[in-house]
Image 1 (tube, chains in turn green, cyan):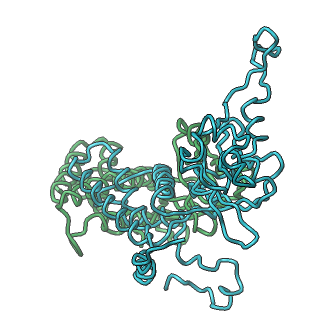
Image 2: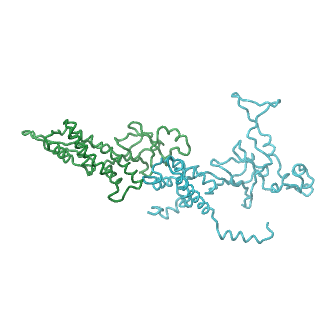
Length: 231
Length: 299
């Protein structure tokens, strides 16, 4: 369910080379690809929110018209889960982009994230004080603190930070030609439906790299048309 | 899967959860609420679980007072101090009785004849208070309580040995305060004893005739004493969902007032339903009681 890094690189190069605008090296492509992938992932959250608001206003649909579900599908490839061991209620977080849910007791007990500013009120209120049935957590840097501290393990479902795409290659020692090395390549984690936006996004940054405003303009124009269609 | 889950009948009958199917735990109520009432496209799009927990617990407390009838009882032999400490989860009493040798309970009534002062400052010969090193008043024994403890309540009830004693005796209360034989207050015409609530010590104080008797205190708690208590009867489960929904919507910004009012009505209706269901109105029992209406002489 990933997007082939070779597909994207080939498409980008074909568009750039069409009018001999320039060449994007694999190294540049990898960096730009990583940036665009993060952009698109971040955008998916905002798109999802907009789609939900539209649906709540009665402007949604079912089946193929179910846009929130389509956007969910775009985020789902980044879904990850991790078991975190706690020492005195404190554990180390995996690298995450967005936390979906934290649970304990084999996922049967939800652990609620709280605002640190409300911690003392929650702890001192007899009605809301955390317990093993209703535990809470807060995050400080890369650590998670769970209360009550008697919990020893939690499960965390989260949106992971995508791995950087790599268009790996081998160089022909005679001709100097680059050949795609699929064994060492890392594909884009994005959903296949994001391929068009991914290519356009790479092109926008590529226009900056090769200093060709017409590429940026073209890619932006295409992107705008796509956005208008979606909305 | 059905609500019975994978618990076999043998496991149920051998276990210590008999009759527990009647209840839904508070944790389940909150999970159900978060699934069914909260989410995208619903009236409550987002709410903190701690808020739901607060409203659920408050609901459980309120329901305990006037819907659930979760009356607890404790049986204790009354000590010579004539005081019975309020239980740890005591909120209010329903009834105090003492148990006779026949096992029948006899109601003990509260009395206003005496009082349990909330403060008894110790005084010197000039009637000044004693203070401790921090400047706080030192409390002494209560004269009122001491006298009441030693008082023979037969003098009030008229439960004296003979007719002569009854009319003439040394009965101060009957003669001077209570208005002799025919001027007695009916509320004092009982021999089951009296109790008062001592707010200072957090206990019930009893009249001297109850010393050594087995007392049963029936009281109301708020269902939040222990985790195991935090459950709601299935007859009132819907009312608790409506209670939480109403309170969440009422405290949320930008919710149209008509929605809040709708949930307020739904809560009230569900609560009324729960009260009716839990009142256990039984036609056969009522018929049996009503048969007594034509009996002229009752004991």
